[in-house]
Every structure is written in C-alpha cells, then in structure tokens.
Length: 243
Image 1 (tube, rainbow, N blue to C red):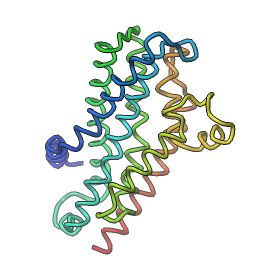
Image 2 (image 1 turned 90 degrees about the horizontal axis):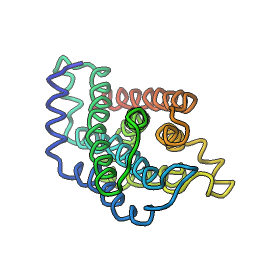
Image 3 (image 1 turned 90 degrees about the vertical axis):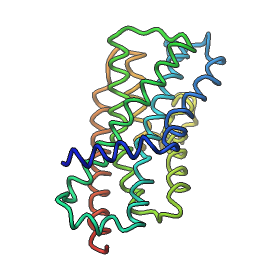
Image 4 (image 1 turned 60 degrees about the horizontal axis):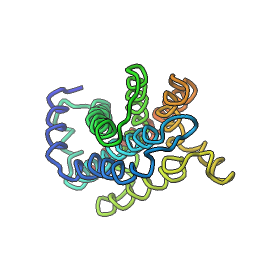
C-alpha cells in the first residue's frame, strides 16, 4: 500500500465540503434536534440520550464509509483507472487504500458526535463503555466501506449520489437504526436480520445494555465486509480491464 497515495486521498477528502456536511454535520444536527425528546427516557434500561448518540454515531459512520462511492465514480469518469496502469499502485493496494481511507475518516465523525452527546445531551458513560462503543461503531463501518466500493463500480457517475443515498437510507430504515428493532413489525424484524445495519446496531449498542461487545454480531459484520469486499474488488478488476 502506498502511504503517499493514502495521504493525498485524505487531503482530498478533507477539502470536500460535502463530506463535512453529510457525514458530520447532519448526524450532529439530528442528535441535537432529537435530543430534547430523549432527555428523560430509557431504551432497554439504558439512557435514551446515550442510545440516540450511538445511533447518530452509526449514522455518521455509515455515511462516511459509503462516501467512498462518490470518489470512485468520479475517478471512473475521468479515466483514473487507465492512469493507474502507469503507476506502481496495483489493484489490491488501490482497493485497500480506499477502504482504509473510509475507516480513517470515520474516527473524527464518531468523536464529534460523541462530544456533542456529552456537551448537549449530558451523556455520562464509563471509560470502558466509551471505548467499546467507539470501537464497535468504528468496526461497524467496515462493511459499509466495502459496500461503497460495490456501489461506486456498479452505478453510473451521473447517478451515484441518488443511488448511494437510496441504498443508505433503506439500510438505515430497514436495519433498525431509526427505530429499535423491538418496535418494528414482525416482517421488518425478520428482514432486518439480513442487513449489515442490524448487526452494526447490535455491535454499537450492546455495551450500553450489557457492558460488552456482541461477538456474534462482530463475526457477521466481518463476513459482510469480506463478501462485499470481494464483490467490490472484482468489479474494480472488470472496470479496469475495460478502461
């Protein structure tokens, strides 16, 4: 993997204002707006404000990770894949760099959401729970980074934003991010189990309820990440072959 290429990618993403707006500001705004309704409630024994904060963290992590699709679509449009043939960067390193970039950008998003949770919602958690929530939420972004690869290489550049947004919101809704799975109709509860969002919610919220990460959910998320990653890599190879 080229660290120079990764550094240039990070600088380019930071300069993109849309990343700031949709990946950080949107979950923060929702957190503050909805926070007043959660002040004195509980969810499965945990403070509702903490539950909301974690949900908005996952929201931001998903958005940040899937944002990789937009840059991939632009690079396809300008013929970047043809240029890659003239550089030392091989396809594997390129794909790994894209996924790693997504994960690196997720960290700041989570930290901002959690800082707002402390300052605006008065969330108080132990150091151990904070650590597990952060790690679980960060890890939950991995399959969505891989999904961003798939969308980026399947969708056309002029429709990438619409398709990416549709996939994102459907997964968030059906996967139980907006509504606790227990409050969903039985059909939706069944469907939710077949989405990566459901397992991301399980991983990130479990420390609030049980003080530990859900090992089964972590394994399922990793399986999603591997499966989607393989599909994304193959799509990259096919796209490069046509370039």
